[in-house]
Length: 284
Image (tube, rainbow, N blue to C red):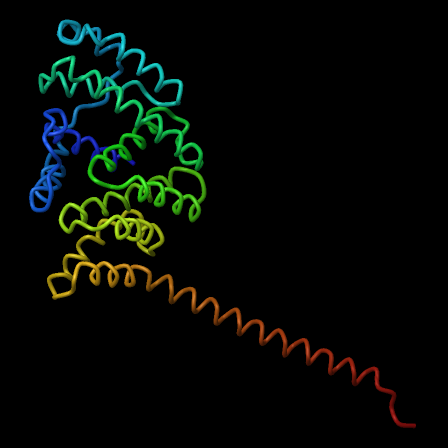
């Protein structure tokens, strides 16, 4: 989860367009943005408590007019089991970029609504961590993925599929978010349709790749495209390869089960035959 949250923080560090009202990048610019996101990982600031940040002199001077609103939003997050550092981090980011208080207020409200909705959805699936810091990391990562262009349907499907596969808990959450991070990387370069994004997200969750190795999938897709395959075919082939080990294992297990069943039948028939010989009266 630490690596996933670092990814989300780096993505947020590249969020000047969001505050300036500029449109989302598309095509090649989106690819450059994703590269910048990963390059910015080393410059992240640690999360900070809301009240501590508001107590700073510069913060009071810049955002005094929205301090009460920020506290109210932070309190609503805390009631939902999240950390108010989510609001503090937004304030700190906006302060560095000199975003006016009048512009920042509605943005904070939008962020808080998204965080609460995501927390509610994750809790309903049994995926939201009980510890506020970890819960906030998961919620922010999901929020960043949505802002990166992942549809809500794909996010919900990946979380649900992962929960069904692994059961409630952090492992399922980590797998779903890791898969969606890969989807976001591929989407930035190849611009998939929503149905394709949905299929890719659930396909990665279901794949035989370990969660820590899901990022290798993007490399596999790019390699297949360089060999002349279309984007769709490259993704389908890569998903097939990622599930090949599991398929073979399942076939072997099924064959063994059939073999065991057959052997069991022979043994049972043999036992019945022996019993029949014992029960048959002998000739006098």
